[in-house]
Length: 136
Ligand code: AMP
Ligand code: ZN
Image (cartoon, rainbow, N blue to C red; front, side):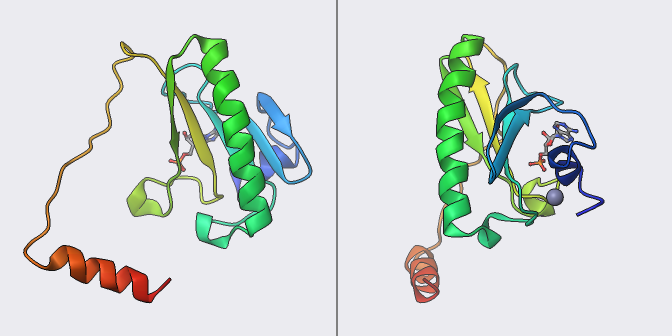
């Protein structure tokens, strides 16, 4: 897709610090890292979200994420890592080409998610459970 920054990296039109490349996926360092070693895994086929990946593409992506996560953490001296995957603008997806973030983490890195602890009204949890199960 010609206006997609990740497709342009895949096509070699924009430089990137590449890490793993196969015929299905490419991984490279994120240009604006949360921490050093923050990297991205992207399928070569342009699709916007996780829901559009084939099972084979997904398998290869997640295997690549696992392989890279260990190496990125070890190489940067991190003791943990986050795997993050945003789908849709409201979920924080800026680049509309599906991708997985791997973020090496250390206890003193100062990065925090704005996580909140919500709750369900009486009966709401079961209703949500039923709604999801119906669509599986
Ligand atoms: P997201 O918010 O999940 O869409 O994340 C997109 C990520 O792509 C951000 O972390 C950006 O820093 C990263 N990014 C955007 N352009 C480039 C680029 N040319 N090379 C490497 N990473 C990029
Ligand atoms: Zn693309």
